[in-house]
Length: 251
Image (cartoon, rainbow, N blue to C red; front, side, top):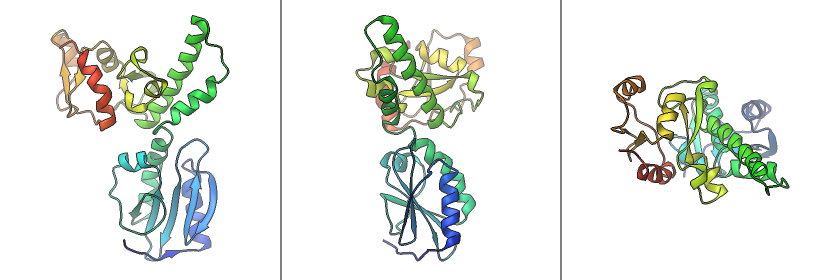
C-alpha cells in the first residue's frame, strides 16, 4: 500500500467536519494520524476524512455494501476502514458524499432495523392491525428506495416524487421474511406507467438489465414507454429477486 502524508491542522479538521456534518455523518469520534472519524445516527457504517499534504482529499469507509456500489476506484493508500478513495479537490469529494450517505442509510438492513424499531410492541392480531404494520413497512421501504435511487426513476429520469412508485420485485406477499420485504435490492423506484406494467408482469428485465415486453402489451403502451436503448442498472442482489419476477412474467 502507498503511504501518503496527511495534514493534521485546524483547517483540515474544519473542512472535514463540514463535509461530514452537511452529509449526514454528524457524530464526530475524533482524529487519529490525521484521519477524522465520523458516524451517523441514521446511516450504517463509519467514514474517515483526511487532507493529504499534496492538497488532495481522502475518504475511507468500512461499509462493504457502500464500497461495492459507490462506483469509485479504490486507492491503495494506507488508512482506516475497508477501502479508501482519493479526490483532487474538495468539490469532487462533496459530489460523492450525498451518494455515500444515501447508500449507507439504505444498505444492507437499515430499513429492516427501522421497521423493527417502529413496529415493536404494536398489536398484530387482527387483519386491520396487520395492515397498519404492513403500511409502516411499505412507507419505510419507499423512503429508502428514494434514498437508494437518488429520488429518480432509473429508466425515465423523472424526479417528481408524486409520480414515482416503490415497486417490489418480489411482492411483499411472496417474500419469505421481513428481511426480503425491506431489502432495497428487492425494489425499484419507477414512474407510474413503468410501475404499473412491471407490477402486472407486462414487462421484466433480463440479466443485462434490458427490458423484455410481454406480447400482451399494446402498441400504444410500447410507444408511451419508449423502451429503446433503456437499460436498468442491476446489482447481483437485484438479480436474485428479478429471477422470481421473470418466472411470473407474462411473456
